[in-house]
Image (cartoon, rainbow, N blue to C red; front, side, top):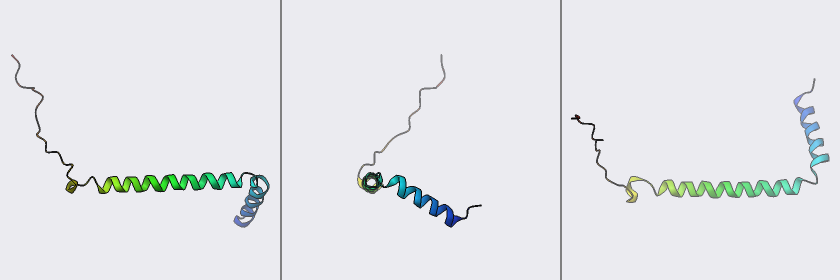
Length: 72
């Protein structure tokens, strides 16, 4: 049966033979995806840092009933 090293070698040869033309496009798309992911992560951190109780966005509330009292 195949071992790990043989499988890695077969995958490497397959990638070289079939992926040479697609490699620049693949790396470009990967870089774009990483940039988008990083910017979204930064935006989430900024939103989370600004939404704490000390941020001034706290709204005081009062619990009210639905008027389910006795019916006549």
